[in-house]
Image 1: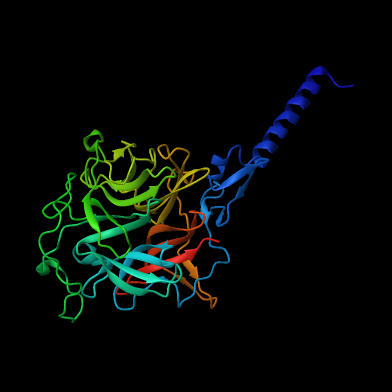
Image 2 (image 1 turned 30 degrees about the vertical axis):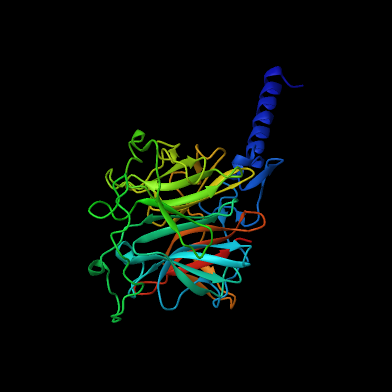
Length: 406
């Protein structure tokens, strides 16, 4: 027979073993445990198409692996053989049944390294989200950079970008032997400096503006972006840049952005909202959206892209936090309180690979892959492609790579 103490000890050991087994088996309790990119079913995350396990963290459904997705070298995205570009999102327009891409392009044979002096916004059209593309027009003259374009439900085209002032011809860099300036020098000084200290004589690498048009062919009406509570934040009171807008179902907008450079070269991410595209904006995250993140310096991230699914809000960005980490993924139930995929040391982890597999089964690992922008399916309004600005090495032209998620 067994003594009471022996039976009690055996019972406790059994219960502890069951608890440990449960901890191993149960990978989730809610969809948030699946990074909002899957649903929790019987303790297991069932990831949405395109999303899967992350090699650098235990967080399920936080990595875009592009498994089985190959890119056609002839239609790799937006790759202009005569001019370097950086970052773009093709948008479908039902009226002409064409895809319209708006990209930062660099004048005078220069590449992305000359963006502060040579960047303008170029518009091209094509029959599919990867082209082939036909050049159309210059949407916004030098200086304009970082465009993200959306089609509002009321039919208005919305372009969010930085810049709006004009760069004198003497300051535009010439990176080739071509003596003919293109695009033509715009007339006048352009727009004034922004209220948060961006423009000539201040910081020329920021300054969010927006433009509206009835057609993707323009003309574009350039406007100041007004922020009502600019001085309430000790981080985001200056140097706001990299606008990443998203239109909500009721027609209002939410935007992720980068800011804070005037504070010891800080680059971090925040969120603001507006009830209408012509209304003033309100910063709803007065502090950075990734508190407690361990970074090697003051720069957390830039170039976000933002979207919403039935489970919540999602964000990809170019990571600047730690060496070897070039991308990151964040998720939120309400768009205000955010979590990021991190490792055990609280560092952000990569959200997608640098290596691309081509349709001929060869691969390329890009040394520079930044500026993530999701491309929306015109039927579901959900992401189905990821665009990146890429460069294949020093001296090569930068261009826009598009990859299908699934």
